[in-house]
Length: 115
Image (cartoon, rainbow, N blue to C red):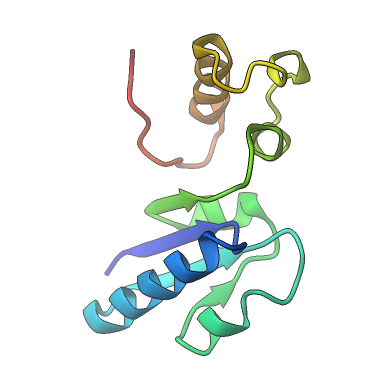
């Protein structure tokens, strides 16, 4: 049994998490979700998901984590990446900084491509 995590239940994330909840129910896996604002998780809770208190708790408990946030600024806030890279949304140095921050976390993180 795997535990999947999903962070970000907005316009794109909510339907994706609902699909993942269906998959988990079908295959005997678990789904934990976290959203910055309460409310959107109701649909996936009805499908058997559980809500984490914060992203760190979710990441520590999950084998695989999907992050669906609207922009890099929110990802930076979530991963504690220095704000100096926030203006360069598509700049490779900024993404490497985010990737490096994720790798330095003590809890397991999603697989990231390595350069």
